[in-house]
Amino acid sequence: MEEHTSNVAEEPRKRNFLEEIIENDLASGKYDSIMTRFPPEPNGYLHLGHAKSICLNFGLAQKYGGKTNLRYDDTNPVKEDVEYVDSIKEDIHWLGFQWDKELYASDYFDQLYAWAEELILRGLAYVDDQTQEEIRAGRGTVDKPGTNSPWRDRSVEENLRLFREMRDGKYADGEKVLRAKIDMAHPNMMFRDPLLYRIKHASHHRTGDKWCIYPMYDFTHGQCDSIEHITHSICTLEFDVHRPLYDWFIETLGIFPSHQYEFARLNLTYTLMSKRKLLELVQKGLVSGWDDPRMPTLCGVRRRGYTAEALRMFCDKIGVSKRDQLMDIQLLEWCVRQDLNARANRYMVVRDPVKVTLSNWEPGKVEYFDCPLNPADPDGPKRRVPFSGELYIERSDFMEEAPKKFFRLKPDGEVRLKYTYIIKCDEVIKDTEGKVVELRCSYDPSTHPQSGEWRSVKGTIHWVSVAHAKELELRLYDRLFTLADMSQVPEDKDYKDFLNPDSLIVSTGYAEPALLEDASGIAVQFERDGYFVKDPDSTPELAVFNKTTSLKDSYKPE
Ligand code: ATP
Ligand code: MG
Image (cartoon, rainbow, N blue to C red):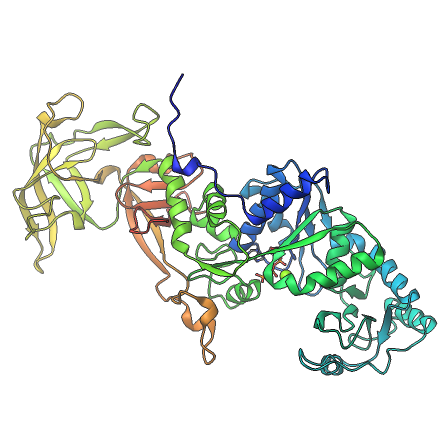
């Protein structure tokens, strides 16, 4: 039998607290199977924070043989849009997950309305005529109890009539609200007669003009979970103060006991993940769109060349915690490199070229080298690379006054051109300003990697044949923001003051021709340089490549 080698990456990690809860619930027979949901509000594109929530909700259900619903939390018609609904589905699929049912909170508007009437009939809800400001003032503070609304003791009949009139469009936005009648002195402010319904004369992307009253989050989320028999309703920490109210509605209505559990939201260095702010960047034209490769949106990082595999690896590595923390974006970049290093095809691209001419090369001769697409698989698929007497090398791979440790090309020095021959620099040609314009070299035919005798030199550099080179537009991306912790924007500043002016630099590259035929569908490696992915802005005349990430980084995950 084959010996099993241990691999750190494959070692099972410790169970997280949600896994512990679920395993206990299954073991105790509390549930036979689990049901989770991912509940996006369709008011923007999904971002990396949502990816964490998706991986968690879908991942837990997968692990324990349960199911996950996709439920759109679409109770605010003003900000929501079908464009977002569609993009969310695309992004979840891209991440590699499939939901059980596609549902909408708006599917339950009739049921929610019926429950509101039920609370009115039971004396547990009333119509309040106070303005938003009066309501806010009446809530009191953590140390000070609130005061009862003058409309709090309306009769059941009057409340029912007014609520129906609200529904029937008799009142303007803000004129009345429906509130639960709980306790204006409750130590948990959430219980001080929370709002259940507000008036909004707005068309809804699904229910059209059927409704002009819309339920509030707290009166919606738990009941939707309950209707769908969600066993573990997982949300971010800021909702922990809502949990008692979530439970109160479920208990009061006597419906399926869904439970809410909170985890810390994902925050990343140099990154903002608020849909409101991301929308502002798009609307102000500060980025090219939701899918600008600098955006933390899933469509943005996808266009940047990040893979779903890398994102899932990242979400798994960061785990789930009960404490808010700022994760290092370098860990995500490390995951991207890990995945692409294993899978990306390799090509040679010269970005800042200097010309090399081979004096002893037969004029006009072209030799082809079959080079592996991935060095990890030397016998695997190949690409054909043309070699000729006129080549481009990277300007930085030549140095006239080179220090001892410089193992690339220097006057009278030798270097191997990757996959091919060793060349020697015989003469340096400069223009009138002293800039190097050509390196006259000679190649050593006896160093052909297949047929020649093996001779090694210290340096190996990449190159492209001038006559065969394909010009590329390169978009070199850097972080969108200059501040590591974007939650620490000072009071007197705006987050937009921290936009990195150099987050996009457009330049040129010269590629070996096979690059343009790459059909892998993922980012490729420009050898010795970085990972790049073809951008949809490419035309038949000009291919555009986005820089995904550099090849190496000193960063090491713990
Ligand atoms: P934003 O504040 O960016 O607008 P949101 O919380 O309003 O985000 P929703 O569409 O309501 O966005 O979120 C859908 C799900 O994704 C929720 O369960 C939410 O808790 C979760 N989620 C949102 N942002 C993050 C994050 N940064 N980390 C982890 N989960 C998140
Ligand atoms: Mg939200």
